[in-house]
Length: 148
Image 1 (tube, helix red, strand yellow):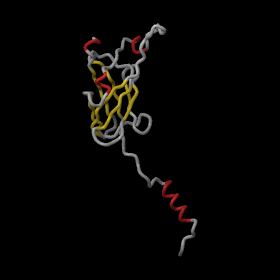
Image 2 (cartoon, helix red, strand yellow):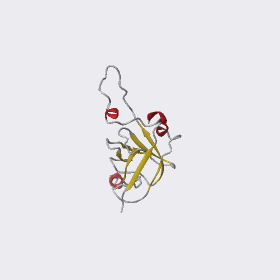
Image 3 (tube, one colour):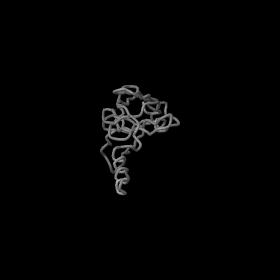
Image 4 (cartoon, helix red, strand yellow):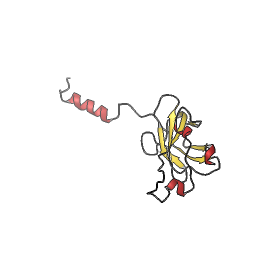
């Protein structure tokens, strides 16, 4: 029996719709907090988990309590299992003569994260994500000597 000509494209389309294409690798939930060594939370910034091997970077925005939840492919989905270098970056508004109200990071008594934490070459922070229901990561950073 010979299949009609138009049934071959329909079969190919069905296979594509069923998900025979590439699958995303499994990710696992990761949540945590970033604090200074004196216990004060880092209230502003972006936390990035950069894999030490091949793979995508996971990111999370810091809350005013210094907490974050990582995402890789979708909102708060987590990160792939493995070892990571952790980078913390900030875009910090600086008060000017025209702006008399201190920016949020200064109004709450927070300070700036030292630059060494913003580059993969200099950050001392590392983390490991495991294939488990929840990964909790607590990161502690040191202030620059002139910020104490």
